[in-house]
Amino acid sequence: MLGRAGLASLAKATVRALKDDGVSVPVKVLLDDSLFTGPALNPAWSPEDVAAGEVAPLFPLALNSARFDPAKTTGPRPQDAAMSTAKAFSAELAAAASAAGLTVAPGVTRVPAGSQPDGGTAGSGSGRVLAEVQSATVGQQVDLLLRTSDNYLTEAIGRMAAVAAGKPGSNQGAVTAVLQQLEQLKIPAGTLRAADVSGLALANQVSARQLSEVVRAITSGPDTRLRAGLAGFPVAGLTGTLGDRYLDAATARGAGLVRAKTGTLNTVIALSGYVVDADGRLLVFSFIGNGLTPGAANKAALDRTASVLAGCGCR
Image (tube, rainbow, N blue to C red):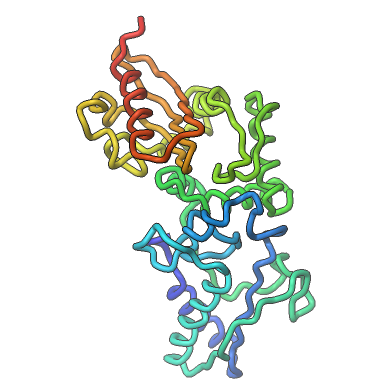
């Protein structure tokens, strides 16, 4: 993420470690991206959405949430984010090595799954760490994916959650991890059908009640650790995917008050969040529209509905 230690810092630290070790031969860059398993591209995703850059093949290594340019958050993404990142690191390493009198062999070699040149197992972390930098925390990345509705980052976090829970770093592992969390929160999910964890796949089926129960658990449920998720909810008229909404007279009552996660597909739209009404009561809500004709009016309709909640006196 921007503002965090990146590839240039990692390259310089790596060169210092190599110099300390007395390395003089050309350095070869290897890529081990075996942490994620299963298909990198979910077959439930629309090819049109992939082509448009709504998502891309999933890898455990990516730059700027698998974007070519961090300043451009729309448009096609790299189709091999791990190799793109490894090549970018190799270039930074070559520059740092040249200044220190070392050389880096051209190209990057992907290590086959299950093997490493030193006899270790790919993905096992058995190699010696030469240098490292720290990314943004998981909490900060969750805030970002909530604010921006970044499908790629959401899917990557889902797979990392699966790995942390001892499950395969696959789409199915991520889905299973999420469903188990819902079960632990006692949120009825028997009718929920999950084909991914970002909500991009049209095969997903989730009710407004289930989504509102998730919001209720975050805002006022007994597990207070979930409160950490509140910071990432977009604020109407101010931040994230709601930053350019709630700007007209019909939705002004909700501006600055409605905090909600958006969900936008071509024919399906959703808004799930919370608001404190005119009586000071916390209200949670989820609105879903299905089978819609694409157009800006769909978002406006949900925004007007949420604004009514903000202004109501319900006693």
